[in-house]
Length: 114
Length: 114
Image 1 (cartoon, each protein chain N blue to C red):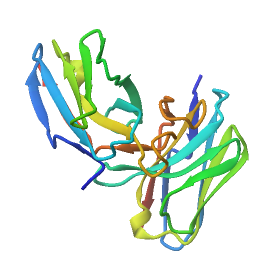
Image 2: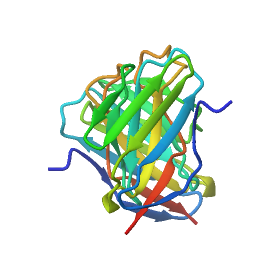
Image 3: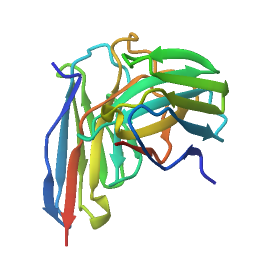
């Protein structure tokens, strides 16, 4: 089983749409969870960390379900500038979940159209 | 000011050659990383250094040798380059190596082996 699995995508949505990304992870000992964003031919950048209680940052909402080992990201009122690949990221099992060795999902590409 | 910088940005070379990629961070971070992103866009950790000491060494051929002259620099030397080494190599840094620390990525080095 792959360590981090995401929707394969791509997602093509109109401006203003709400779009949801889902992710599952295999290591129950993982302690840290993130969504990174990667624009075409650019480096990944942290979008937001994901906390057990769920967290929101403007139009972005992240949820974590530890029991199901499931992470989600919701983007409301999507903008053209949201077009990018969204990477689900958890820290590695191999080092007991307490060190910063990140495992990246393959990412889901989002294209927001006018 | 560039937080994490890499040189060169592009590298085209022949099979069998030896090449180096340099990385520098001006964030005062203790931990630095090398990642490889292959043609399928899968981003995988290669090495992690904390205060110049190697802490993570994933299953990487020993043709790849990282060197950290000080905690602000982590260079990657590759011997006897192979076609399969073609990828984008990202350097990253974080405050320390604990899980939960944000990793900041450099712009990437696009390596093409002919």
